[in-house]
Length: 458
Ligand SMILES: *Cc1c(COP(=O)(O)O)cnc(C)c1O
Image (tube, rainbow, N blue to C red; front, side, top):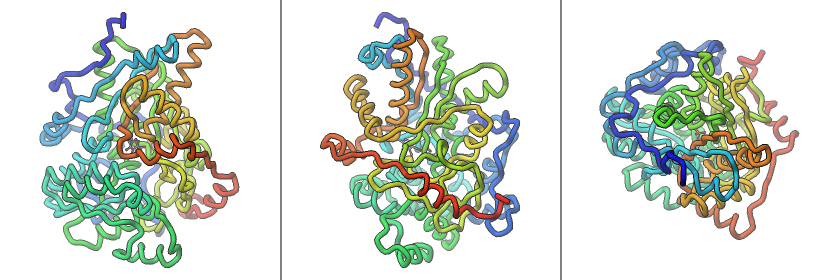
């Protein structure tokens, strides 16, 4: 380690940003609004208030305010686990024998094990400030449910989590973490909601999906007094809260005069990619700098690279507002052999618009290649990465290897969103050689896209 750049760059607690950044303020083409599935009119705040928290709805609809003050209680909570380190991956660079400089922002240093706590604590704060009794949500791999359970425990809110059945069964330990924080965890689809009963009647053997769990959580929220529904990704407000990641990274880079050439994040619903990259994309939009930004998605759920930019249902039960986004169709369910998260059929409307306008690239990667990257990273850098995060690692390594060929010393920064401790079943399959790559056929995607709503797409 001859360089003057330390292995880990920490900001001090007093350097943690006190405002979130809203990239919509700098976008010329704003993301398309959420619209009503009944007649296609853009939803008003009055229509959204029975479903979501009021203050969060204001954030959701605000396309012009660039900076939002982070409430003091949220800033205090952030101090428990932030700032997160920006790490120079010296050991990985050495193993790859690359001239590239690789940095990662590590968001896995809290009990939820991921970046999701950055938004759950904000959402729980606004729910509490509104005087609500509790919130409902869905969780796939379990990270969001865990993050929300922690946040609700902190602010004294009830927390009802609909957990995709296959994860509920495969990840009993994740469930216990949520219960320890006081959450009520229900496998989805369940018999506790009308939409769950209907889905079970139509598909008795289904292992569930995120879209289906969303339908149940929304129904439970609107039918229980004092409850609202909260969401861990996709929505504009979530990208806003997650901007703390990119803002910290930017500040740490400025401190050491680091200028990234390539910025990489994995993409499921887009919240970490949006949060990490949007302060940098803001610089591009304002004409201050230029970066290559790459979103990485699984080949088994390729919304950006093989989906369509259209209005679609956010949930399988088709009861939520419609969002314009890159989508594989709300009926798309990725192969059950796909490990970990990143299995949502759609994508953040903000990122969808930015991608559509050419502000970043997307790439899809196969899961065995992802786990090879994860293994190499674990063995060199010490951290056992989450499968989701490892999509970003895969592309960071690929880009670093390209630098080895060309001799360019590019600076690559990626977001390491979480730890892999809760995904050991996936690691087991990889280690035993039983993991394979199942990629949806063009026909399967086309079939699913036939069910796009007419509303909004005429
Ligand atoms: C949820 C999750 C993701 C994907 O969600 P995005 O909203 O696309 O960021 C990525 N990594 C980890 C560790 C997660 O828990």
